[in-house]
Length: 92
Image 1 (cartoon, rainbow, N blue to C red):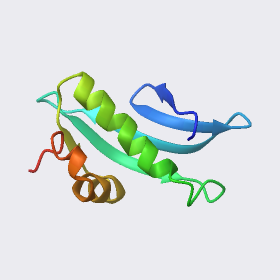
Image 2: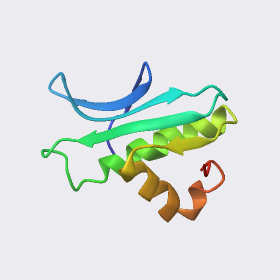
Image 3: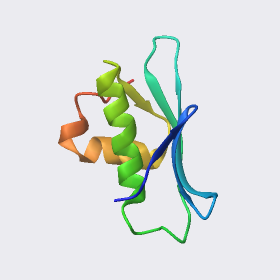
């Protein structure tokens, strides 16, 4: 499990002082969370970091009683694939 840090509108993983993975989000007008982008460096690829980043946003949405709109194809795939995330997935 990676050490995930919460930033301003993002969750990220650092290694040696550099961001190696991140997921960015924003609040929309209805106060839902909109996942805009997910990136995992080649160095961390295949370690499940992307899934952990999506889970971090899911946990934030649940804690704030919000739904998630995924504009990022990777995040949308993960949210649809995992039934346990369907409670926060907003279909538009």
